[in-house]
Length: 276
Image (cartoon, rainbow, N blue to C red; front, side, top):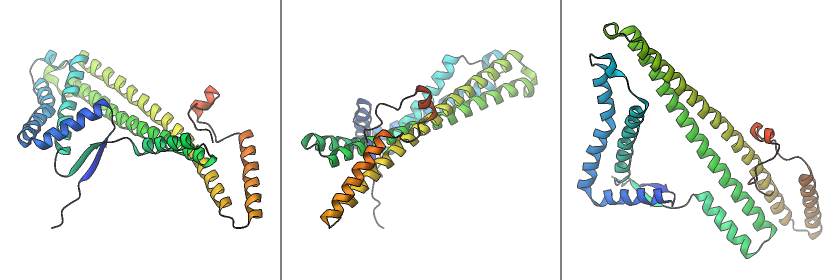
């Protein structure tokens, strides 16, 4: 039976990332501690659900009321249990956990070093491409996070509304109109938060499209330069260079790629959109 290659799991070199990687390696080196952490993670993860079930099936309607602070505490407690189990899973033999910068960030830093050594048109073009790639990757990460939180907020809001309906219509022995209204309002507010996350997701996708269009322009310029340099005849190479120079001057005076609607309202492109 062939041995499976461990999956690489990278964390960014921030204080949080360094602490997480150090904790995971500690769990790797201490197997009894890891098993104790797994048991603790399971207990912490499911303890809010058990507590809620006990509250729901209690005979006192007032006992069902959950204040916002208690709800946040339960959510944080469940998240802590999930995170602990996640770290225990990464401490297993199937993962290689390490600290390293994003590939896009490393490429941008390498391009900046090349520009400082020799500021040639090629190195400047590579730096612009690396910067735009990094901005595009950051926007993609933000868009995924916004969409994920939008789904979580929607499920929480919808579940809260269903809880209010259940308290008012299905629990006739402890019918509480005030509790039904409170849970319904809380569910509507949570769904409004979900809509806000979806709006952020849409805005981030528009920014990602803008950076993608700028990146395509830079790559097309780089391809044109490479094709011009590949000409064997010096006369044809000069004509190609002059053609590229003329096109670049025309592009610099023309309108660039369409701005996202959020940027059109401001009337200006983002300051970090690259120089190409």
